[in-house]
Image (cartoon, rainbow, N blue to C red; front, side, top):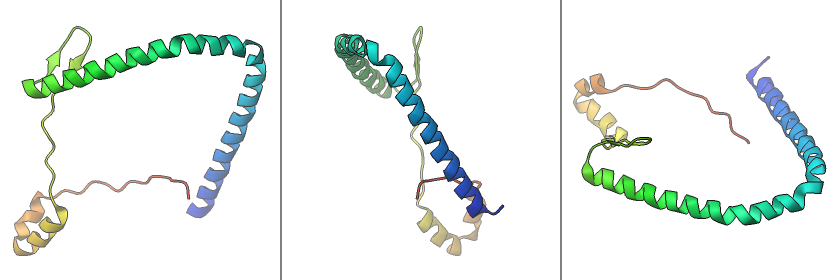
Length: 122
């Protein structure tokens, strides 16, 4: 089987997954129909509370990150560890490739990762 055929087979399996999931959702909705009003009431009661807590979490998390950045070192609490990491160094590959013509020794400092494959929708 060639790669194109394998991709087509993979796409078909993904379509089958979607079809099964749709069938499952339909049956699930049918089963849950009698309790949907109660679930809606529960959501109406708890969603604002959960949103408020998540907002507080986000606010305090941002404050902790800012404080750790100012502190300049990791800090460990009883349950959480704020890990400080040095900023990453990056290089302009195009310029360095050009400089390698003049300084071939620069090539010794270069490493290249293995190729990878991602599968995307067309």
